[in-house]
Image (tube, rainbow, N blue to C red; front, side, top):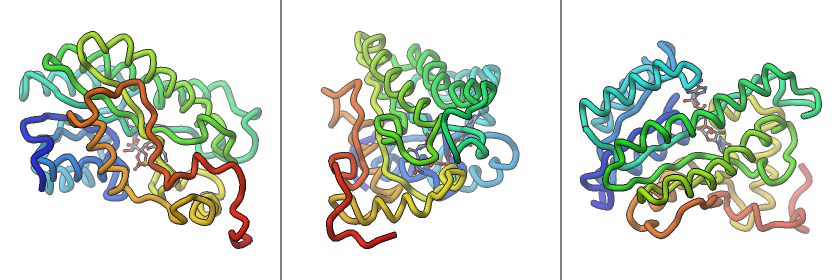
Length: 264
Ligand code: NAD
């Protein structure tokens, strides 16, 4: 690998399996020489995350459910003990009830609205707050968002509203933490078939639509998101904060279905 991230230590949340975007980012960071800590959400994922962490020589910082602040605090206590400092943080966590990732946004329940916002938005703020005192040499915080924050996408519903709030919180925290040389950015990834995405109604249709209508005429991979994340997490992007970088084969610039796109 290249030494772009040599000497850097980072916490990555959101690895569920080897198809996770967080895994693509972890591989890119490890290959560039970073030391990593991963967390898992619950025992079911522990069995999947432990061997993946081993593959990269990463620390397993334990169970972390972002709705349980004790588990979040425990992760940072462990990092403080093991490393004493932190250079970067990756937040690749989101959740909404599958039953509401179909049909109409207007039918969202209050419970699922609050839970989706808590897990998918507030968690970034809670993590940034705890990372700040450990980022003594400055730092880079990165989250994952989607175009459904900007435009209405079929079935994305409450997640679109949550991603809009997430992108706004990136901008607010960029200002709050900028004085400590901590940068806060997001990558807006194109659709990728992951565990979380499989909950979204008609996801295969969305994948094919992007394939036919994006400038690059294909969908992106987790490795491609990982390489762009490397830019955001390394000194190469040291002048960039509060930014949402689209890694989506250019889909976000397109205003209309391609004239030569097949019917799907
Ligand atoms: P994934 O299922 O592999 O990852 C989602 C992760 O969120 C899992 O590791 C899960 O454990 C974690 N999570 C959910 N609830 C949690 C909780 N309460 N506490 C701690 N962790 C919790 O799917 P992914 O697609 O890699 O998702 C990663 C991020 O990328 C999400 O923010 C997602 O919205 C975003 N994203 C995904 C796509 C896509 O098409 N897959 C596109 C753009 C953005």
